[in-house]
Length: 250
Image (cartoon, rainbow, N blue to C red; front, side, top):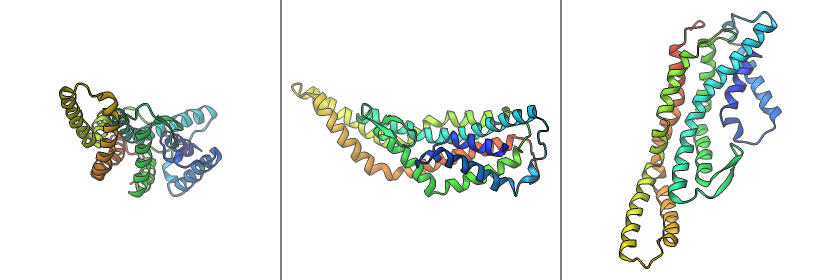
């Protein structure tokens, strides 16, 4: 039960279980089944179990907080893709067009939704879910179930990841943003030489067409940056595990 609280909080903080519509009961059963599968071979790590209702409630809240902290590392990585999508939406002109994002269930601009869905697709294609499960299993060794943990061992890696979030998000959109910046210069020159032309009416469709062409041409070069974003998840977790005291055998 304590392990399922950690896993439920972890997956609640991430868009992984929300990519495909499924009932809430299925998500609950998934968390319970996964916690049972992990607790059987790693039962030795639960060496400090609560003995009373008060200890059980405190351990339950502690596991929820730990799962949310681990999930925050995943959430910030996917937020990098959302940052890139919002930058492009503003630059291209899609910022006013809102669509329903199937992952977050909220209204977001068009390219923000596309980048979010693409991030989930690539995450599964590069076997990120397998690495995630290995990280969860290793967290049971570094943070045993039922044992108190220090927030100080997790704060530094999370702050470091948050500091690089905007940089990686901008790196995803940088080629297209640079192309649109050059287009803005060109439109400015045309506006100075042809003052009778309505640049507002002419510039919006030109920017949309040029932005989509640049995105389709330069999109293939985003793969290396996307892998860096995913690697930040496990780099953050590795920092948490290194700073945490060893809680069990290796």
